Image (cartoon, rainbow, N blue to C red; front, top):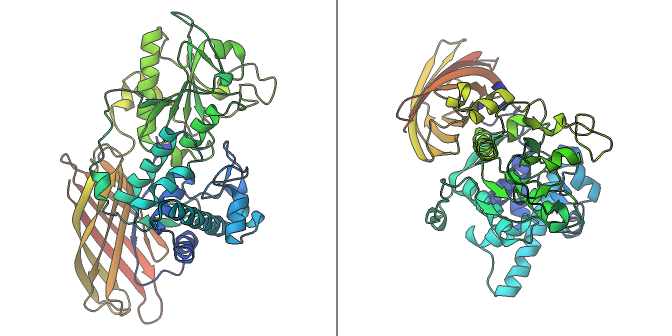
Length: 487
């Protein structure tokens, strides 16, 4: 179970931290200022396409590179065009997250100017950047592009705070976007959100019936949800799957009818007798991409497929791409050719969801906390070992919960803190697991564990104790903090 949990972080800092990484935060701010692109657009788009991972310049399946997913092809958003617009060398765009962000911002700014020429109106407000964010999906299909932009704007509206692979906490405060509040919610009664057909050159037109489908094969996209949908629409791809599942909320897009044979297994006999389900993300980052929402949505889909086709709900018939036999070439299935969904895929939990037994009755990611705005309070007590002085303060926190992720921030004012710092800022973010919170706090780069609970009404309580050695006249500071947030 621990493999898919996102840690919960509580950051308490006395003054600016000198040890916590800030490269991404600084790059986003600098790019926003230099190229006049809202920092909210840059951060939320980066989170959607990469979870802030530069991936050492490695291309994903749609040819995207870096934290902003710039394309190595001529397709928008093109790395070459970004380089020309922003002056960042191509190798820097691939190797450096900062250069990747600056290049992307330069490209977005250029596109905004083009849009202004077409409409006669400048792109000023957050809402007016929506079509440019939609285009960033790289898809020419309006459904795919709009779905991508809607996901980005969900995060802009609700706020997020996520830890990058470098260990940096990247924060995005919630933004008031009234037009998003009025957007109709998608009904949860249907498993499939939308049907977007793959190119007919990427699958075989069949009429499979009862007994023909014997397996469900689990895949990892090695890329983004929008990018994979676009790839299956590309007639030169020569690959497809029946379903794609999004990481953030479990949204499902069907691309091949179950009666037809999708080209996904790399082994014809398994293609002929299976349904393929692709999952957004990367095998190397299971804790980042394999969310509880995706597990649950996919498991419900697998259970439905098994029920309709009489497939036994066991590991002999629900298999990973790496378990398909017949790996004879790079395009084949099997562990010698493919590793997805990888060792980070929690098969025990997934199967318990499919069979509706065991651990599947409990959430692995925040179902006890409903989406929406959150308020609360915290109490802090700070003691200096050198003087024995103790200072206390109480502050308010505000923020939001979205998809099991919680973000709260605030500060309190100290009366006589030993190192003369008056304001004590607090940021609390992460996910919940059932009724338990477990994670760590960071005090100016120093880690300490904390525990908390989710109450029956959805309210949250957490507390921790940690220390920070400031040496000099201050000595060791001991921090004791408790926090309570409304349901």
